[in-house]
Image (cartoon, rainbow, N blue to C red; front, side, top):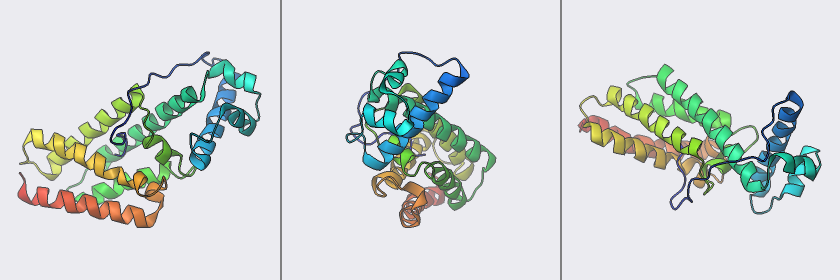
Length: 213
């Protein structure tokens, strides 16, 4: 759920690349660059990472990196597009497959997905989801997850007014951001942070379900 940018997030950034990898060798090179950048962003932070460090960590020349990415902004955008799309697909599948009338179980399903995707590389997903940069795919993922949450609320609270379901879905997304803003990127892999976010979500959702408003 935590795919919405933080308050004050910057404008949507359309990722571009100097060259799209077509051959297997080029795709493998790009994968190495993205993996190296992701590890460095999560470990050092965006400001403390530059393209020279990324190239060195990936074991490639800076020239090879610049064949595909003109800047670290483009690398970040590519990572964000890839990971938010993967997270969105996993959350969507889990919410559809695990449709239940138990809100605690629904929240548990979602946090399980977050934990799995933020584990390797450690903290990368949290970094990407709290970045001020948003890509078109990030926006699409947010809308897809909100839609799935609305459908879940139709099961959990069938008498709730449809317009309110949409507002509640947005609130759930924002509360879930606490996984990464409070947990310093650890997200659902930090059991203490996960427990607090889970409690906050249940405290918000349960009265709404009881009211059925």
